[in-house]
Image 1 (cartoon, helix red, strand yellow):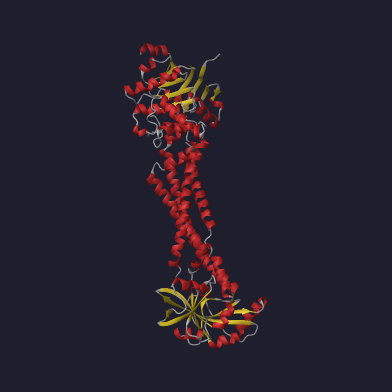
Image 2 (cartoon, chains in turn orange, blue):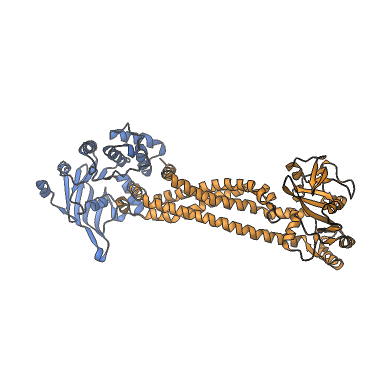
Length: 385
Length: 232
C-alpha cells in the first residue's frame, strides 16, 4: 500500500461523485483552454496579417471605424467609397507605392470566401507573391482568378477548374504559394473584372501604401490627406486598434472561462468537505494506526490535486479539440476570423500550463477540507457515528 | 524494576467548560503489567472509553500523567504521539472500523504503510498476519464479505501490523455472537502467550473473569477490583 493507492481507492469509492466532480473541472478547464487556445495567439496572427499587408499606411474611406480596420486585415467585405480619381491622386504622390484593393465576399460550396480585386502586376510585386501552380494574370484586365493556396486545397481547385463568383463562372488561372496569411484564403481577380462583377465601377475599398523611407511615414500620411479627403491610418495604429478590440473580447471570454473554473473549484471544495465528514471515522482509524496530522492533510490535498490533474488533462484535450473543430465554425466574421489562423499556432506549452493551473486550483480548493480533516482529534473522529 | 508497560497517575479528563463541564475521569492511578491480559470493566458512561483513549495516546489528559513504554504522553507533540501509537499500540474497536473499500490484506497493508514498512514487504507481512488470525483464505475479501468475527480478526491482524507490545481493545466482542466471540478470544489467548499485553475494555463479566488484571471504572474512578470479582 502506498499513499497514492490509498488516495485512488478513496477517490473511486464513490464513483458517481468522482465522475461528476471530475466532469465539473474538466468542463471548466476545457472552456478555459478553448478560449486560451483560440485567443492566445491572436496577437501574433494579427501581427502576421499586418506584415503580410506590406503597407506602412492604409487609406480608407473617411470615418472608417475600427471594425473596418479589422476587415482590412481579415479580408472581409468593405464599403467601396474610394473613387478612381482619389486613387489616381494618391498614386500621383512620389516616393511611395499605392495599391488599391476591392474587398468583396462570395461563397464556394455555400462557404463564405474573400474575393479581392487587385492590380495584378503591382500587387504581386508589392506582396512578393510566388506562384505554386498554373499561371498568373497575363495583363491588368485579365479574366480568370488566382487562388490562395489554402482555399484551393480546401475546395479541391486546380488551374483549369472553375469557380462561381456572383453568378459567373470564372476560370482558375493559377494558385499562389502559401503566404501564411489571409491571402491563402482569398480569390483574386483583376480589379476591372471584380469591379464589373460587383457593380462597383471605378470604386475601391482601400489603398495600401508603402513609403520608400520608413522615417517619413507621417509626412506621407499628411501628403495623402492634402490630396484627398479620406482617412489615413498607419499600419501600427491599425494593428494597435485591432489588437485592442480583439484583446478586449479575448479577456472577456477568458474571464467567463475563469468563472467556470472557479465554479468547478467550489465543486471540489464541496466534494472534499463531504468526504471529510463522511470519512471522519476513517480519519480516526488512520490516526489510531499512527497517521500524523500532516499525513492526513497530505492525503486529502493529494485527492483534491488528482481532481485537478484529471480536470487539467481532460480539459486540455477537450479544449484543444474544441479549438481545432470549433474554430472554422465561429470564424465567419471579421472579429473572429483571426481564430482560423490562430489555431495553427497552438502552443503545446498551454497543455502543460493548463494541467498545472488546474492542479494548483484544485489543491487550493482542497486546502480548507484538508485542514479540517487534519485538525480532527482522533477521539472525536473515532467516536463519530 | 518497574514491569508496567503503561502506568497512569492522578489522571483527570474533563470535557467542556463552565456549566457544561463534564469530568469523565476523576483521578485515576493504575499500572498495566507487561504481558498481562487486563480487563477494564464498568457501566456505560463511567469513563471506560475515555480511559482507553488516554492509555492509548489518542488524547491528552487534563491533569495527571500517562506513561506508555517509558514515554510520557503529555510531553509528546502530535507527531511524536502519532509515532508512539504506530509503534507501541495496536487498536481494536467494537465496530471493527475496517476501511470498507479495501480488502482484508489492504487494510493491514495500510497500517504497515503508516508504520513505515516498505511497499515490497507489506504483502508478505499482511498475509502472515491474516494467517495468524486464521484468515489466510480471506486475503482478498472486502469487509462486507466477512462475518463479524472474521472482520474483528482482520482488525486484530491490522492492530498487530507493526508488532506492537500493547493491544488496546474497546469492546471487541461487544458486537459478536458467542461463536465469533470464542474465535476472537482464541486468537487473543495465542497473542498473550506470545507476550503481548492486552487491554480489553468490556461489559462482559465472563471475559473479565478470565483476566489476570481487572480494572473496574465507576464514576470516573477506579473501583476496588476485588469487590467487582466477588459481585460477579
